[in-house]
Image (cartoon, rainbow, N blue to C red):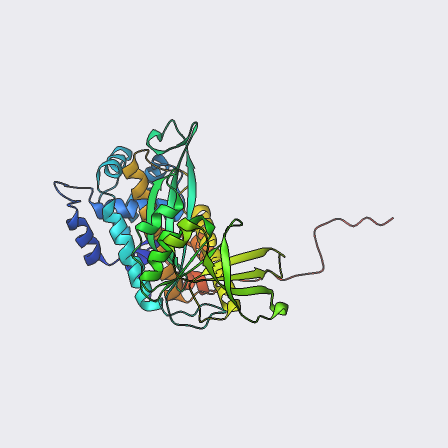
Length: 389
């Protein structure tokens, strides 16, 4: 039962304070800090993400408009623009990265066994991809991407069971996607779904040696020799299911084992897709469905760019950019927790829209997202004039 607490503070109830303080102490975030603590900084930046504030000035003015509500929101010190800007520039971004991963781990512990539609196995399934965020070269010279353009990349590994990222690496736009495979901690028995930008036989063989499975797409110039062909049902969209061995001297040295090559024509789009995988036991159609699940990471990138503050940044230093990205990930995790705890039937976007306009309201979130809205009765009469001719 709600006891007059604000909507914002109810969302922040999912923050484990002991874990947050451990992250702060790990990097001495509150060392010699008297007033504006790391937790105040997190709450202020989370408020900006939740309500989609345009700038630090906008964020500070909005919080200052309700000074009586700050205490009830958990913010002990009302921030100024200069104080918040200095905190974003100087405090270690790893505090908020570690804390976001703590929230994600909490979600995975509770919802990590959620079934994936169309797939019937218990192993972990991950989608790996990256998304580029364009920046202004004059403001972000450290993130030079091209001659007149700056950008950063979010390299992300998404858990397809509970729709949360388990790994995020922020780099400048020039870093190639395939290099991120060197930074992943490969989980034995897990499935990794990637597009053909990650086709590197040495790194794929490393995944194979660690007893994990991968599904990716082949390039058109793949040089191979067919070892075995398996029977298929062409009515399902499959065109071939083969065991192959690479023929190129370098590629065969980098991946000496057999690979499975599956050709599939999508009935909906008519597009011809060629998959490469080290999975030999699953049916070919299941592998095609497994690759189709990779689209969830594209939807994740689209969601966070449209609903959180990631296209425009409050600070221009690398530290400020990373703090804002990781707090955005933490806010995403908090919204997922709120959505699952309230068992709301609406989407995450719809819930965020409601939360963004009611942060100071003292009403239960469950009431906000489940209350039946009154329907306007339809009548035959209207206010339009009727001309009789």
